[in-house]
Image 1 (cartoon, helix red, strand yellow):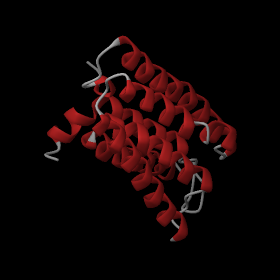
Image 2 (tube, rainbow, N blue to C red; image 1 turned 45 degrees about the vertical axis):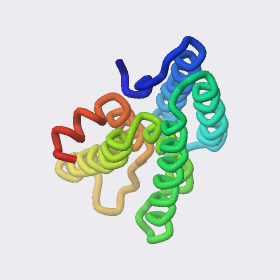
Image 3 (spheres, rainbow, N blue to C red; image 1 turned 30 degrees about the vertical axis):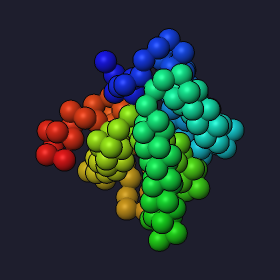
Image 4 (spheres, rainbow, N blue to C red; image 1 turned 180 degrees about the vertical axis):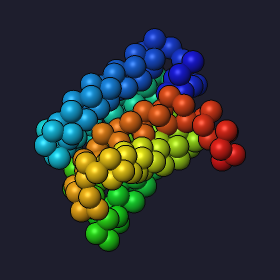
Length: 173
């Protein structure tokens, strides 16, 4: 069973979780393409993630999913949002869209579990760093070249959602 469905029983709860992650999949694909092309993560795609995920995951809990998953989702969203906001304030190259997206992804990762949150948060930086290294090595970019980070955040989050528990165990986390 996929990690987002751990402990989720009953047709209504399963449907609510499935809809939440289906919406996230559609938004992820759209946002990755937009950010890669424009270096923007539009609010029209990012901000609905907060009420959509919150509402559907709340419905899942009301229908029998573990409330601890919803608490983890809220904590995950806040933690990633604050972490990215601190990076942005420190001049770490994060845009406002990255900060807002981090909160949405933190909610999905948190719902999935602590290992997913850790792996998903870290994997985005690993993927983005590898991409930047390849660009530098092939002389397609230099140190000051702006690189869209949203696609790497999204890929990292989905890595955490799908492979988080296994990866964390393999890394000894």
